[in-house]
Length: 319
Image 1: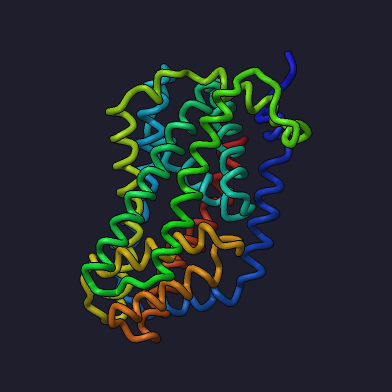
Image 2: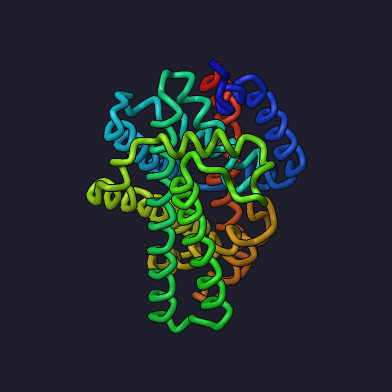
């Protein structure tokens, strides 16, 4: 039997991801040193709170995968999925590719554990639809909160509209790919490497997951909790630097910065996320210096800190 694209990835993916992660870390060594300096000055209790919140984000995503795998008929324990979530995040960060590198890692890792391509793909499709459903919900909540705080601007509405088109287009495109099944892809996509195999995996994925409203709602709420936990981490960082501010003022700042980073052309949103977050916190009355320090601490916890265990977990997951 011919090896699938995802099985072939196992041979070269770990080394490529580790090399890419090392390049990313070395090229931003200054930011890592700045993060370490800020951490040394912070109160340990707030740092522990931030760590717990970040672990909660990985747990939420792992529960989505756990529920989807079991609904698709694959019995797999919950706890091993948590480090897989960290490793997938590292994969997406090491090789910015719109989530393709993380998807390749996830497929290869679960294949290694005896989960079929079809079940993996069904799990990813459910998670994808739920993720962007949660993201759109967070975007609408952001508009409402900014309107409540009288901080709404035309450019913010434009960002939300552009992001909403992207967020609706990605899962729609994935479902359209599924609807093609075993048909020939459009001419423009015909020469894309691995696309035919991908379409076959998507077409053969169990169909019942997308027809379970309760499962989809729970998965969406779990993904929405990730945005809340990340925003709460930013709120904690503001407490670290001595700036008491309402969580409901912080939440739209984080979500808007995430949207700008998502639709922007810069890998990982480096610079664009920080600039948007600092600017929005300033609109909410946080001094620029304080907002910048809190944002850098947040990025350290959500971006740089997972890089270290992520490198090891990629090798563990694909060994």
